Length: 154
Image 1 (tube, rainbow, N blue to C red):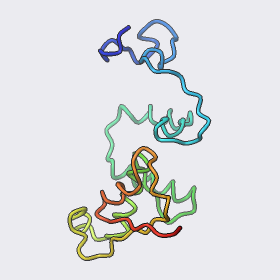
Image 2 (cartoon, helix red, strand yellow):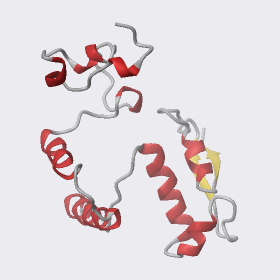
Image 3 (cartoon, helix red, strand yellow):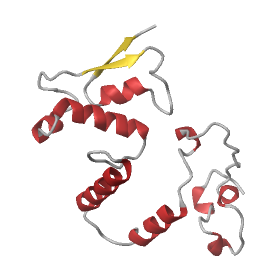
Image 4 (cartoon, rainbow, N blue to C red):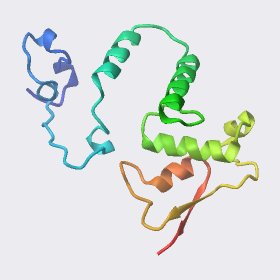
């Protein structure tokens, strides 16, 4: 089977009439991860209850702001933090955290980022050697929010 035409692939085994592993159907090789959580390897394997919740809500229309608010409450409760926010990946989380730190609760300031920080402090101090690339360089995630990285340390 050629991998050049994605239309040739069926996503569910029930459609193909066999129980072939989805990686085989998509022409992907199995991976043995000995490195831990890594974006390049799919970040992490989802828990069955999270997959079930996604399958249950996926065919429904919902207000994303309300879902995000409920998620924030759950994250805060489970982690003991003030709040929480679901993001697509670590890079998005870093960018959102930097943006929130720059703007606080000023929604108009949020809309002006990354081009205009309104004179607010926008320097992010990174320990030397910590501007690593985990799928995207941390410095890039910082810049996307309108800030600049400053390396410190040995």
